[in-house]
Length: 325
Image 1 (cartoon, rainbow, N blue to C red):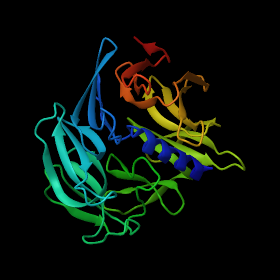
Image 2: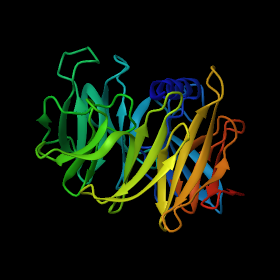
Image 3: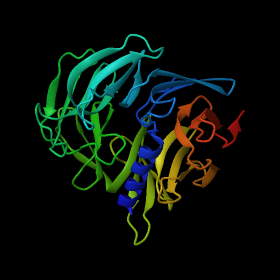
Image 4: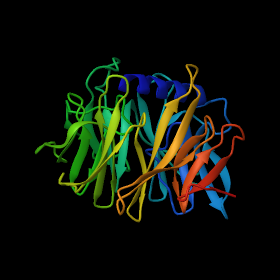
């Protein structure tokens, strides 16, 4: 069932071009996100700003990119040099669209994650054009200096998952490609420890709280166990979801918000629902069903940013599930 979901999600990305904004960054009233739809006015990197619940979206880099994320005053991202659809160069740009700068013009990077003044990456060996070859894991400074390979064959990759690693307090958290379980290890690649008891579909840190969703495979449909733990893996709280997916989007006042995704047909139409789980009461409620093909973009002040498919605009949904006007 999980394979069917991944295929459905890929079909949505190819049809509508908006990549869920897992790797983007947000300030209090704005959100950075990217779209792969070259026929849309939102192609490339966009910055959406809300003023009194009304949005203004500016396209600041209208080219094909991946992994855009805000860190400090810069947006870091992968950009294609036009020679390969799987591997990229690393660049940065300011939120107003100025000061575009290449960090590395090696067209060999597959994924990046920016933490402080360090860029962590997956990279192919120079001259290796087979995208199925194991990638190396390494790091560099955000100015492109001090690049080094940490592991030549890491136990993780970026296939079929929204993020390849998360860095938290000196540890790397990752989904192991052999058994899909969540692990952590030191940044030098030693001391690996398993965190989850089953394979995971998504994971995210909210302060000192780590959330991940474990997959319970069924005969016809999978279900999910949402798990909240301390960073060392000590279990705190769990809940069960029988939806098709479970993707974390926010954690506010002990309320956990997540989206579920369901394909409506075989041509790429889909529905996204926003749910909330209260750690106070242990109850889960569906807040809102988005209109068909509307795309969740990310968290902003007071709620969430959503891209309207029909109107081609961005609107806000509050934490209460109501559309803000």
